[in-house]
Length: 188
Picture 1 (cartoon, rainbow, N blue to C red):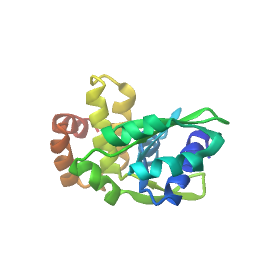
Picture 2 (picture 1 turned 180 degrees about the horizontal axis):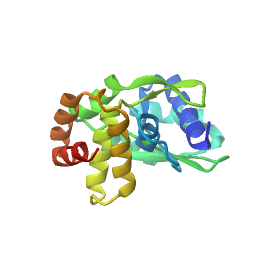
Picture 3 (picture 1 turned 120 degrees about the horizontal axis):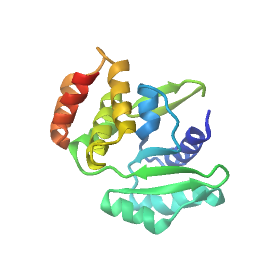
Picture 4 (picture 1 turned 30 degrees about the vertical axis):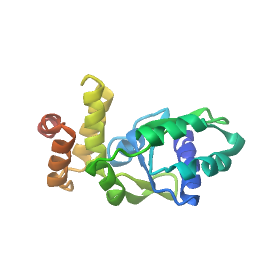
């Protein structure tokens, strides 16, 4: 297991102990569902509430850099904050879900998967959701990230015939990326 995944799972374990729903997203998820690639940070979606902040900070202890104000701001603004695992210098970005139907559904659709080479299970967003999330990031980033586009195509190609196309199309329409989904489906 690489340091990025180890750091993400260490943070996720503490979230789970507090009863916080979470799953892996971002490049870790697209590598699990698609073509593996190196990444230097991990993304976790976590349904954090204000009452979780101080217990989470205590649980992280001295092993992590964590900012209480950044956590509170992320919960209030439905955005993200980062943690840094001091021993490995790995960064974990923790995203608080927005109040959209898509984001709420991600938790229900996330799956417990056995991770290759790690001999453990972890919650991971489903393949359809990582495609949609990556399409949204691709658009927000100006639509020119070859890395994001490659992640999207990798997931689509490796999961061809297994994807819920209706879920993909409905989610893409909700997030305003239906045009990009069409382009990605045609390119796969």
